[in-house]
Image (cartoon, helix red, strand yellow):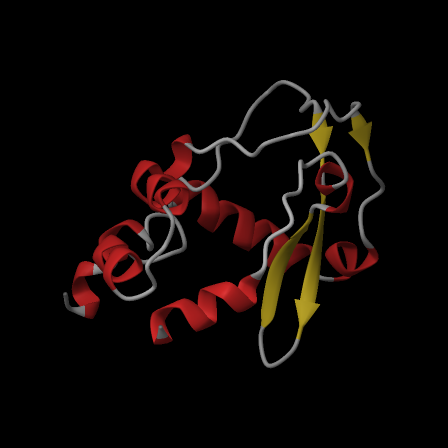
Length: 130
């Protein structure tokens, strides 16, 4: 696989690398299924998050031109879609400032309703050495 085979943007970057995940990382069947099915994966929620509309983050207001450009770029890449209806849960976006600006989605609210499974990552690092 060459770098020209890997899609530009975030969407679809894992799927071309599924053999690496299967053969070298030895990912579980569940994780391989998530990678292969792509956007069809649904997060396991423990309950339904109530509707919420949060206040716009200050960094998004201060960098509004960047936010508008970044959102337009995501729409062009078909990573997101524009809708006329009000979303059920509207999450905050903030701008992370470093060497370059990055758009970050704040998922603190819906993350509270995710079903969390305890896992021991130490096992994953020692199994290949056995």
